[in-house]
Structure formats: structure tokens, C-alpha cells
Image (cartoon, rainbow, N blue to C red):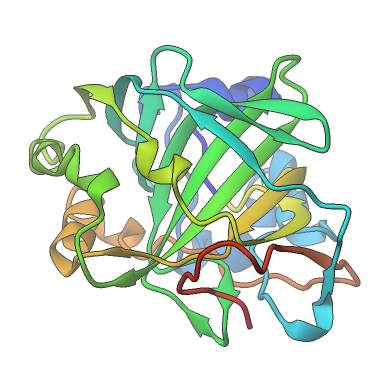
Length: 270
């Protein structure tokens, strides 16, 4: 997961709310001397990237997963709202100008602030890395807690979510951000509620801050090969592959919610 941040004043609020890539120059990459293996040495504030014990992404492995019957169905209530398509330098994202809706996790409310894509997927499921991964980034009202809902993709039919701004992606090659008008998240609202996975991890880019509540939906979405190309096209070569390598689970358990009476869905479970 990635977020734009003014690194001189690192806070959870800045991690989730900054909206312009101009706030900083990206000093990390996904390969070479500035790649993931060296993130923790690039700046003191990045130390968790090397020293953290609850990092993301992880692999969903049966031996690390336990059913938790206390988990509740995710109450997703996303709303159509004005949005801006943004080239974050290291990924393509959508940022919301107004209230975009919220989710409730363990009685705590998190508001949706932005979403973005990685390719290939960062989390590994069913023994494989998938073609892409969507992160929906949420923040509590007191701006002290982050929750991310992750959706895995495979190549197939076009994704209606991406189709809303597909033409704008071509324009983004020459612009840093483009208004896309009303963005409708109904496709996510109606996603399968049969299964999801929950664990506590971190941001997946520097500063790799821990304490992030991850929820990985158990249904694979599809996007077309053309949509995947368009999501990569505005990015510089060093960011076209923008997935952090898998991190050690370090004894953490991944909890699973499963509701067998919900409709059948292509699932990502191992």
C-alpha cells in the first residue's frame, strides 16, 4: 500500500491525507540500491521497513489462517463522490474531495480517503501472485488509525470500476492529476461478502509504519489486459512493477471470516 506524505512531518494523518506528489521527491524504488531490501537504510524514519516485525504484504497460507467466528460481515457503505485521478509517481490512485463512505471494523468507524493499484499483486493467495491489487485506504476520525481493504485481480473482463476513468488514464501521461467528476464505488459495495481475511500489518511503502488493519476480500475481481497496461503507462519504468516482496509472518495469525450461505464467488483462499 502506498500513500503520499510530507516526510518532514510524518504522522498517520499525513500518510493518509496528502494529495499531491509535489509534497516530496520519491527516493525509493522497487529494484537496485533504492529497492525494498534497502528501504530501511534510506532514512531513519524508514527503519521499520527493515526492523519491523509486523510488516506487509504477506502470503495467505493455510497454517497461518484460523477461522474467527466472532468476526462480522464488513459493513461497506461507499458513496458516489467527486474524485481526482492522481499519478503518485509510484502508483496510480484516486483521491476523494468529499465523503466517500466508510466501513466499520470491530465497532470502530473508518472513512475512505483514497484508493490505488499495485501490479503485480502484493499479497500472495492460493499459491500465486495475481495480476494486480487494489488498496482502499481508510482513516478513523481521530486520524490515529489506518485500515486498508485489499482486492486481488486476475486478467479477464474489464473492471467497471476502472472503466469509469479509463480514458483519463491516457491523459494522465501528461498530467499529475485529472478531475474525473463523480466516482461511483457501487461495484465495491456489491462485492461478495462471503469471505475475507484479516491481519495487522504495515504500509507497504516507506516508512512501512505498522499497526495497519488489513482486510483482504475473498473474491477475485477481473481487469482487462488493456486496463492493466493503462494503469502502468503513466509510471516511470522503475515503478511499473510496484509490488513490495512478501514479508515474514513472524507468528501472526491471519483470521478468516466465512459465511457459507452467501453466493458463490471465485475465491482467493489457499
